[in-house]
Length: 396
Length: 134
Picture 1: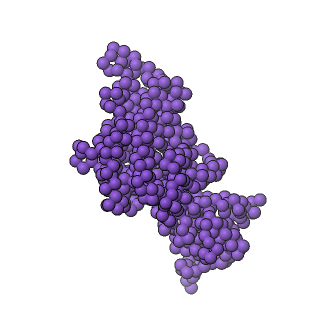
Picture 2: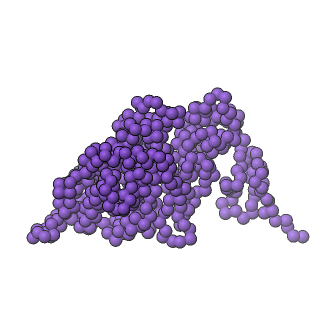
């Protein structure tokens, strides 16, 4: 297994955030000569054991929010009940996976399945690679509920805590749970993909977890989730659009309904951060800059299927090529959040706060410029097998 | 009489080999697979001394990128990181150097650029290569 130590170049770090196309795939061992630049997050695979999934090996920082700020979140519980829980949908009004799949209790079940498979046949492999990657990400939900419960001041202390924050987290998890379910069942019935390999990947991924570097701070945590919900909204929206283009209206509806959930969640999380900007503008802008400096890493960046050491990178490259989720989207989301939270208009900031404000406001154009430069570079086209589709190859 | 083995060349970390031709002669390592001695390891570098104009240009670019005041000293061996550069700054510095000197820096090489001197050296190498193939 190759040791791949990412040095501190932005390009290498960025692959965890979106597919940053590299002129040559990084295969050979690389040794950091400048490990002091920035805070290099490294992904290291053990050379001793074969088939070991990647691990986060950056220093895992805990409780970076000063404990006195926990009070802020306690005092926000009433506000959260009135302003955040309203973005949850009552279960009776919610869609369920069955609404989008052949009905096993009906006489027409087999026929419906045949129709589903006939439509799926018309959809190309590269689309399925991206859909599978998205499904695997959704299926790693236990990691995300865990992550929310690492946050100080808002965690669910018992598993059934009556605080608004805990109610939100459990209900959010329940809503998200349907996403993995519906995609899993669709992919199972489609016949286009290797379910066993996919299921193995899910098991590895849940086992790996992830550290989004939110350091138990709800400031960092809710900024991260705001970004992520918007990212998933964009990405499922794109897979919906592509499904339609490939002639599968039902699949398009499925992806579309998932995207609608993500939009509602995005609204809730961005509202929380908006309130934090009101209560503690300096602390919140510092948190925003901190998350952006560390880069928003994708939840499934540690994905592994037992075969491909570069699985996430390869999957991201396909998602980038198909326009499902791109570097440009990353910059757009950042720009959107800067606008949504009116970061440029903040006043009364400390010296550090002003630096953070400047950094965050100036960052999106810099990323865009980088991405433009990079896409202008001629790249050799590489075809890579994916175990999720029985080792059939797809262009990166 | 036993022949003196050619491989008895010990290179120490403090040795700096100036100029390319002397480097080639000193480093005949006997049986070398590619025939060309490859000495890029993490321990030492063969640095060809870059022209002062190149070094100055790099300093200028670094100062602009990092918005450093006129009184901040940027020496050839200044590490970008200690001047306050994060990874994005470093990539942008490399990008600007590419534009300024009309060269293209490969990913592997860009990761080895941590000081002004390293940047200047790499630039000279790439410019020379470019001119050679022109």
